[in-house]
Image (cartoon, rainbow, N blue to C red; front, side):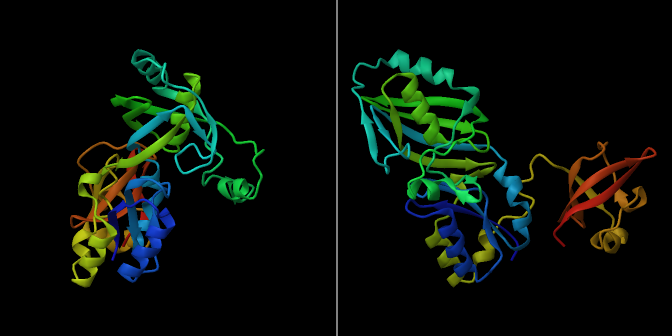
Length: 300
């Protein structure tokens, strides 16, 4: 079984826990997730099966959309509601217009420092492992991230519910903490739900219980999405049946073995199909005005 399951991860489970559960359900060893989702967060977590694990990093690089709640006046060591409270401040004086202004400041490309309680590796160890062992003076490198389409949905006393789309590597916990710091009262993330990961949407996600029942009913394959589904930014090219064996053996395919209906660019990655079946990610090579195709990742 090769493809992707769009899992609705529940709170209280790590991404690795979900992978382990799917391994048991599908009775497969080759299973992987497409980027961690905090244990205390819920939402979309695409899980790759079999040969689909080869494209996990491509899904990981996609934008993510979240619905989050920020609570002003309380700071925690983990930047969320599950950490230890380290400071409390009165936030009742914060005006709505000030909140809107600060949110606008955090849209676009920003510099962000990830929380110490995160899965980022430093010298081969996860930051949260170092933090739990008492090493809290670790230098964490800041990074550029992109915050897009941040919209406040509601403001209720010291709580703000908002929706945000962000680039790979953005921490919503850090975003909440930084907004609180900007207003001088501190804040933490009190709720997080991932609604989209690339083109995987929560509307089409399945719970682990639903997946388990499908496996019991021998219908799990009906829930598996094709490997090419997330490759929306790759253009398509078709290889002729006569060139199938050569391509599957890793050979370069010349124009006579290709069906070319558009102009491609040198070094462009493309989705490769044979008899209308997705079989690879290929790389275009322009050589002496001829267009060649080399395999980049084979799924045959």
